[in-house]
Length: 501
View (cartoon, rainbow, N blue to C red):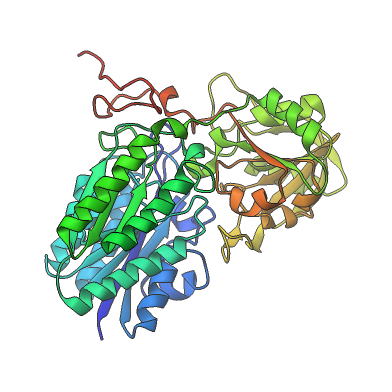
């Protein structure tokens, strides 16, 4: 049977975010498994909802052997540092060269990585891998739904396969689909035909959720077109926070019949274009959201407030306090906010001890202009070490290590502190500190969409809140400088025009 090289390098880059991703960010993982090499990759990822885990299991079940290269991921942030990119990409390429002849390569990539010195991190990595294995060895990669798919990524791979759900409950399943496609290519021995087309507008990530319209209908159409035309299709709405010319939406497909692939891709692309206006999503100001949540939330049916613009899964640091300030001002009964990423305050809580109170200066570490830490007296209700396993559909099987954690309370408002950046997308993050999310009346979550997989089933309703933060819900709010001219910055919104020289 075949010998397949397996590696991964995942980062979602918000070029407007306050902090970069250095090598240490990949070593810790920030909620993802830590940077891992060689034979240790398969056991490290085993059982987790991660593309490489699904791919490895599928390849082994088909009788193939795998050669581990390197696998790493870090929380979304600003650019990957030159040092981190070169060290991790260098390990992947070096280990691939040292492995000797392989029959295929599978890579677990994100698709929206920007490094300090390279706009298209994945395109560059694929070029380096192709330089080792040549043109005849198939190279197939799985991608995040938020990939900004570039011409180089399409040209330098044999196939790209993206997630179809947001929240990303199908990460391992996507790795499985990519591995099955690689097995098919190896079995038939012929390259796949490819087609890719881009769209002319950006849309905020909250409106890309696949449990709501228009994405729900578009992905259903994708699957019908796929069956009709014998294609492997993907639609990536893009990550609209990366300031480089190829940021944006794409539709692409692979298969054996080039004409049918082109027809399928064109049809899906047209459907996305026709749905442009449907991507508009209403946003709430913090005070309006809190007042509505207080009226409608109840134990057993909480209202969920998505603090989307400080989402650690989109480049925020999880440390802004705009929504928390509104909760405290209204003393919202039965309210819980998390995760507030504040290592110093978590250490302070551990030093004070459970059951005692102290004055804290919470959050605002990353320096959003005009904002200062929220000061006040809080009771330390509970403490925890931050190590637990997630149980929800999105992060199922993730073994978290979020450092010292604490539960603070002032009046009716409780705050879950963590020390390592990670978005609030799993109920286990709250239960670890004795908070049962279903019993709250108001749940304020630092997340954009991923929380929906585990929290929407218990929620009376979900409100997307535009509190201050670096992960803008409306792409038109960013100070773009490098997009391709004419790209609309929001659905039916203004087009980007470069500043005059």
